[in-house]
Length: 92
Length: 430
Image 1 (cartoon, chains in turn yellow, cyan):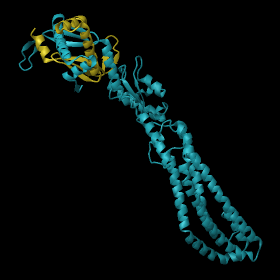
Image 2 (cartoon, rainbow over the protein chains, first blue to last red; image 1 turned 180 degrees about the vertical axis):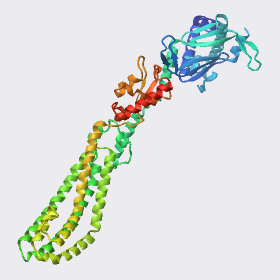
Image 3 (cartoon, one colour; image 1 turned 30 degrees about the vertical axis):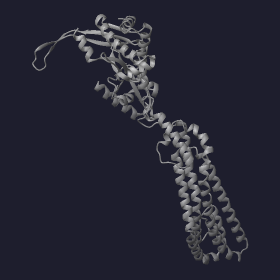
Image 4 (cartoon, one colour; image 1 turned 180 degrees about the horizontal axis):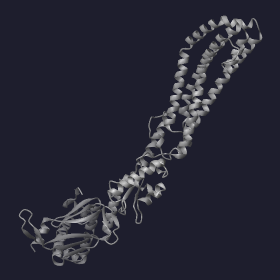
């Protein structure tokens, strides 16, 4: 499902205009990103949580040359599904 | 990730952002979640442009063993949802990570030390007092620049001690002058009777001598202290202790002046009887006081008296002498210290580098110390987080420790020995 389909479906179901739904969706996106950037988890009720996780620095070895490299530490966005989502997916 | 936004907060934030009403937002959010789940079910992926995509991944069933019973079991497969952020969003978060991670790093001790040293130097310049801090000599490059501004600044605080010093030595000689002159005069007085030439010589010589010495002392002190001002604090320490010692000496001399004069008088009284006998030795005495204490033709008793008088003067003369001797080496030290600027102590980190591709520890050693064999010191310093010294991971953070010039000198047998030992140790280890 692409963004376009998502917008169409939501507009159909709620009776709002596509334009309005597009605006709302972009607002949601920016709120989510800003929240993540301030290191705050974002809950989407009934679906799951988007959060930042710290990945530590680690050494990798090039399989062919045996050269060692360090992957620098970083933060990643990760998604944790809610219990509700897990259930619905299990029961499908 | 300690903090978590609440559902209500999220809806409120979206409402503020989009300008929609509460009802709209809640129905939109509910529908969004519904559609996300529906989309995952049907297409196994929902892509939201500007954020990322939710993907459903299937984890296949796998075999395992029940740890308690040892039975073979099958862990059933399941669906899991993963989120893949858009590249732009990913970078935003990566940048965030860099920003947060680099904050603690730039706090290098050197900068801090330098800043603190500057502060301390400033404070001291205000106070005009020398601290007993050992850190001071370790001030990096700062001495160069402060040196020029400090000279104008410091005169004020330093002027204070000088006037104190100046008057006191003056006081000290003053008592001496009376001590010496009256002492000599009585000696001379009897002399005057028999031979008129001698008295003329003696009084002239002595007053001339003393005034000469006094101005010389003062002049010496003043110019010597001015160049010393821009120097390190331990040097100031020595200076101040010196001046205090001088003051104490002068004070002691001043305090016991009367006793001394009495003592000298008593000596003179003893002397007078033999002195009356001969005139010439007296004249020689006075010259002796000026230059050489022991002139050949003097009578034994005379020489003793002269020596004692001379000893008293020596007390005064010693002071400037001591100053001169001690201050000169101090200057020499400063001159040496200024160009070298040994800001670092052993164990300090002079640089933190990341190992790049194609580099190894010996290259870093060559870059920082001028010789590759000195890598053992770098490894020794970073041993805790580096593995094999021959195969250090690219990108490893390496702290380069400060080495004393002695340690850097590869020809130094001590250093050679040390390098050899460390090398053997690391070879065995790996």
